[in-house]
Length: 220
View 1 (tube, rainbow, N blue to C red):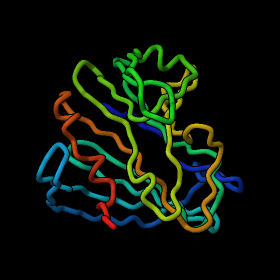
View 2 (cartoon, one colour):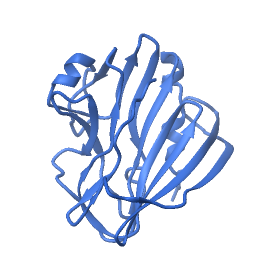
View 3 (cartoon, rainbow, N blue to C red):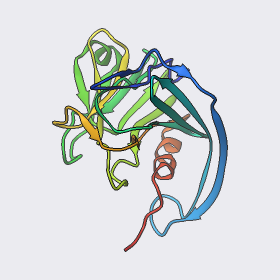
């Protein structure tokens, strides 16, 4: 197991959409295409995934969890059927205790030297980490935690980072630097929360999963 059972959900200023939700009928789909890129890691890229949308109802609110499963990882995001001010995201990822992470604290430039963190230190610290965050677990699996489709909407959500609370093994998503809440005026979806999982470092770094979770580029 690379990712252990982990919590999901959003909390707005008016309701907690992380518990007490009623499961509605889900829907599934499969997508498979190949497209070319003029730059990047690969000239031809395959975008192949299985998707499931799981509506969760609480009162008049419907929070839909959308997950895409690829051969080399998974991405998920939320869609809410109305506008809201989101004050917290309960999404988290729980990794095995036998592992190492590489990353650094949040900043606005993504310019840093990566620092190595043993999972014992990560699980005992109160700390924030910028995305992406890279890990190696059980001396085998390589994992990249990141996000996608952050600023591609006409009304964008918010970039995120990760945080830990001393004594908890959960690594939790939170809003980015200096952001305490996010207000969306209409129905919306969040950015994708993404995890690339591979048996070796080369396959992890060569993954196109993050690229595939972003919409096609539009040149004006």
